[in-house]
Image (cartoon, rainbow, N blue to C red; front, side, top):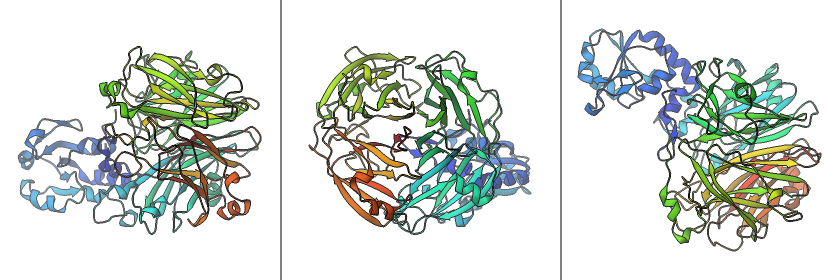
Length: 628
């Protein structure tokens, strides 16, 4: 396990981790280690563990602390000593494990042996030109970063789409620093692009990048750092993977979670006619040792190690069946990731078509929450996990509940299905599913022929009629298949309490401000290369809320200029399929261009959405939307 602290739902992201793990800072850390010699570390902020995990080249004599209660604690493999013992350390240097450490240096001078040089982490800061707030280095806005699965191999291209949503929070001149890594972790290219001056759309296509830098084929990862931001400290994006060799493959995924995790779940085992490839991408400047990663059939507790060493920032394709032979759909697979990688992608190959999707963070901090069993009546059905049921004449829709917490032993669940007008058409109790369950529900087995011919949506909810436990981190995998072409897409997401004025802990959630999160800002990219974009918007409600949404569809161009606005009303507990071409004239969409987007805005309720593109020939992509 990599000794780092990244993110938790109470404190948010660990900025010190991002500062130490930043790829540009990695070279400075290595240089600092090379000149430190034998070094004593003073650890005023408790970051010696991640520092030594991410900079293993330091030759450490010991770790010293000022807090008397911390003496004896193990930090980075060393039992912490009292700071008063530092003067006796026989070392070449003393490293103060802190940024902006000028005052600490002054105060520590009399505790350092004569002749020892004093170093600080200020020597491993990013260049000032890469900082949004140079006055305070460990400000979260200085580390608005993310990784992107990026591929241009002669068969597939990838296309990142986002917007300068920071402009809406007051940012004036946002820039994207980009570094592209190849499969072996080598740097293929490095550049900066200016974001639109306003809240405009921004696109990076792997084919354009390859031509721009004269590159050969690659499958690797793109590191992005947004500079000059405000309001959000994560780079959010949608990523399309499309066939560049006239093939039929097409898929999209939501952004990679910016924080490495101990485990990930939601990886489907292959069907008999499928091959499932997990793309493991090292997120750090230190190698992943052989055996540090493992796959396990969910609930089996018999992890099988991945034998390869993975170099810094390198990419490895792992055939799931080769590691776990005999484990087949509808079984699920868990990745023991040891905090080495951000949310990985996986690739499913079937019948000449490839689709890309992502796994999700499996939380290690959650316990069963007995309060969910006795939620106040005003919270209605409580936690909901909504997902689309695509028009059944063309599509099959399947749902597979997925354990998403290390200590989640069972899931007591019910399936509620709704028509677009909000009427419940059926409900089915699914039972108290064990962690190792093999259930995947085909909506064809739940709904009568002809019901939801034009689509609708369904919701997973907790149902304790036969016991069971709950933790509020309800997740599922959703699979959609074109009945004629065989093309498929899949997505996964988690549940929340939706659209009640009453709150439970941090629910209902909001993108900004405190709960309840009764507003919507969702990003819908436009189509490209003749493909038409679309989304499904769901108005889930744990209890009664306003009868209809008051939803605005705002069409923006690549510069962030509002081109046109259209209105939409969705019934409470209902849904709607939105094709921009049905709401905006062709000339308006042409003005917006392929880098434009639709902002879905509603101040009366929180909507949930899934988006994708349709190629008009049986191919489509589909994943959950992001908001800002």
